[in-house]
Length: 259
Image (tube, rainbow, N blue to C red; front, top):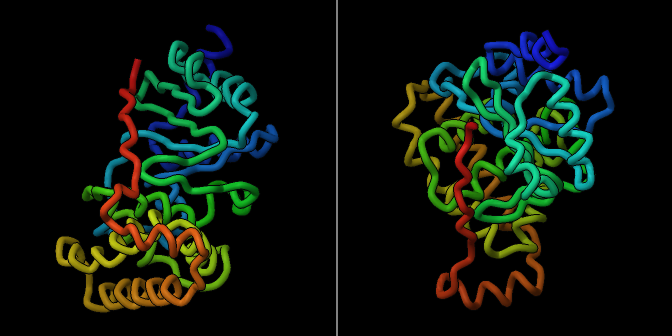
């Protein structure tokens, strides 16, 4: 048995357990890696996720710093993950794909930037928290999507249910940081605030108590109010004059996963 095969035997079947294991291994090996996506939101639900928001996870999403692609490739291969060699050769400076063959699931690693419908800058904030990116970025990456699906809605609601909206990071959603980003990018503001406002219409689809619904509603209102009061940049004001007459978002190409 090769060392890679032996490492592959260590990959956990439970997605959340595996995410924590990989993050802790990365920390021990000084690999700049943080968790994104639905699994990250589950990991940050310290008191346990509200049952209404529980779901199955198809893959693991990570982000690393620009220039760290080679280090991350060696790291995941050492853990027994199978590289998508052709894809990684072509796009490895921006994105890496790996596959866990035993459990039939994909690992997606963004390098440097998060860009889908909008770009969410990370910079030094990427490593601000252990294990995952900060809660503000988790919410931003979920609500920058121009057409939300059920899992994105559930993940965003879970974040707002489990964490207060405040002016700092840690266990709070940093409204100051979100507001600053939205105040400098009209397109991001347009999509994010529209999705935030739309969340209320989805609450009835989830089995929540009135107290939970009220908590989420109040936090949405607080975040919208904070974004509204943030002074907007000159570029934001100029782009606002054009409004919806010009498309304000990107349509990212879908990349097929698996071998």
